[in-house]
Image 1 (cartoon, protein in one colour):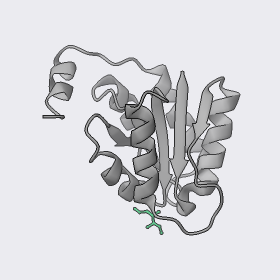
Image 2 (cartoon, protein in one colour; image 1 turned 180 degrees about the vertical axis):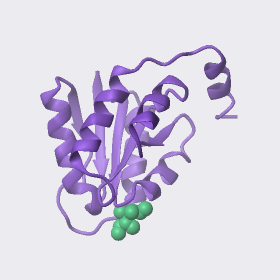
Image 3 (cartoon, helix red, strand yellow; image 1 turned 45 degrees about the vertical axis):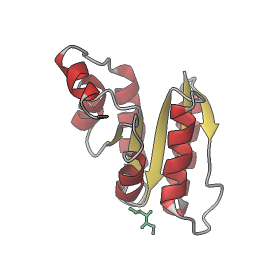
Image 4 (cartoon, helix red, strand yellow; image 1 turned 90 degrees about the vertical axis):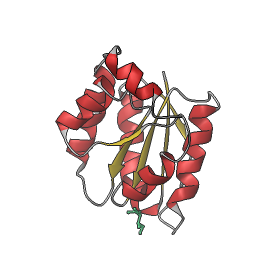
Amino acid sequence: MKIAIASDHAGFEMKEFAKNFLQDSGYDVLDLGTNDCSSVDYPSFANKMAEAILGGKADAGVLVCGTGIGISIRANRHKGIRAALLYSDEVAEMAKKHNNANVIVFGGRTMNKEDVARRIKIFFATEFEGGRHQKRIDMLDY
Ligand code: RB5
């Protein structure tokens, strides 16, 4: 499974952490930037992520900005992207089970590394339940 990862400057450090965690867990990671802590605009990195997923260059994605909010908003404006901000372990599980999220999002300034690593693990270890949830997902992109 190929996982794309991207962040703005406020999420850079957490992105690097998540990238290493994913690689150590055996995933193939496509890093879409940013590449340092210089100020950049988070919508551009949400757009890069959407292009990678919708263009078939990655199977899933991880996005990080300061709070995870701005980058989620932009990512979710792309038809076909289901970006979920994983603010708890329960949400990490439900984002896959019920929403089949294809992008997971973290706040680099609002979450700690231990929580982020655990939620990445929970999300990718969980299966989508399908059934009635698939019908609802089909209704998202009308
Ligand atoms: C950047 O300062 C910050 O606004 C951004 O990373 C994010 O938190 C926006 O939602």
